[in-house]
Image (cartoon, rainbow, N blue to C red; front, side, top):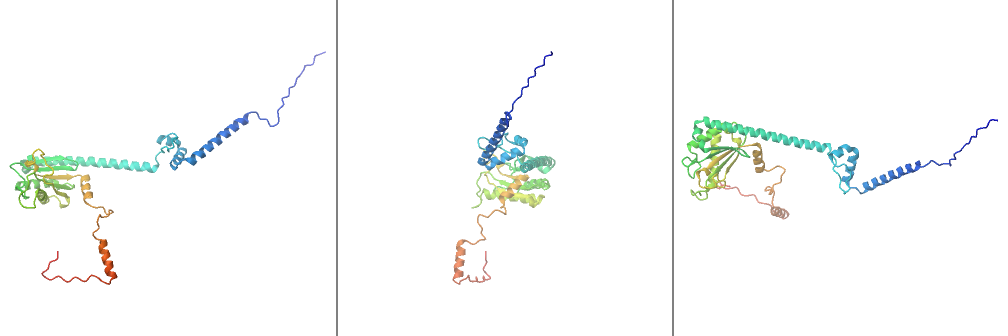
Amino acid sequence: MEEQPIIIKRVKKVAAGHHGGSWKVAFADFATAMMAFFLVLWLTSTASPEQLKAVEGYFQDPIGFTEGGSANPVDLGGSASVVKESSADIATNDVQILDERIEQLSETLEQRKMEELFQDLQERIEQSETLQQFKDQLLIDITDEGLRIQIVDRSQRPMFDSGRAQLKYYSQDILFELAKTLGTVPNKLSITGHTDATPFKGRPGYTNWELSADRANTARRALVAGGVKGEQIARVVGLSDSILFDVDDPQAPVNRRISIIVLNKKAASDIQQNAGRKQQDEPLIDLTKPTEEDAAAARSKLENGEWLEDKPEPKPNEVNW
């Protein structure tokens, strides 16, 4: 008799609705998301407009935001992080950089032109018999305003007679020779007269200030007669002995001089802007408007039926100034 195998069946009972522990993971994710959501709501409700803009910039372009500012969209200290520059700001910065480069290039080119003019004047001095005789009285250098030519006095060779504004014949020849070169440049010119510290005793009310200004104007007339265009003259100034060439010896002949500056564009522009008034600026005193006293008097006469009588015609022998 064969033995029958014994088969044991084990049935696993599963309770209704039981899904194991996976629901706990899902609930934890949900709780985390809700916590993050309420954290965002709390941050946005307490954040400033700048901070909100920073958060917006971070989520729109996290990579660009990180390169342009901070990696954190909101600083825990309460201040908004720097968002990368907008396209308009970048364009404005590019324009400013371009303008600066153009200005630097313009200044470099103008500096080269001044140096070329410096060389031309030196060559003219060497080639001109007139200037060659007086080259020890011609001082040429380049300043912040442009190319400066100074014609100085020597002890036995003054440009003007003592106390007078009339040029010596050789001084006039010097200015005529210089005008041949200065008249070919488009730059504006500045002419300044200087005296030494010896007080002027020629006539009452006439001082070294008037003398230096008159000498500068005499030099201007000589330059224009020699070929400089009248519209090239930007400034004629008399400075008396306020700016000495030889400070250690105020009475030295070298302090008596005429300074001619070939102005660069910046210096010429500064002179024009500082001397003139912009159209949009209001005058400090408008002389065209009547004063309050005049307006009150006019109203009073109108109220009383009075008006200004016509002024009598002036007699033939009377002169009105």
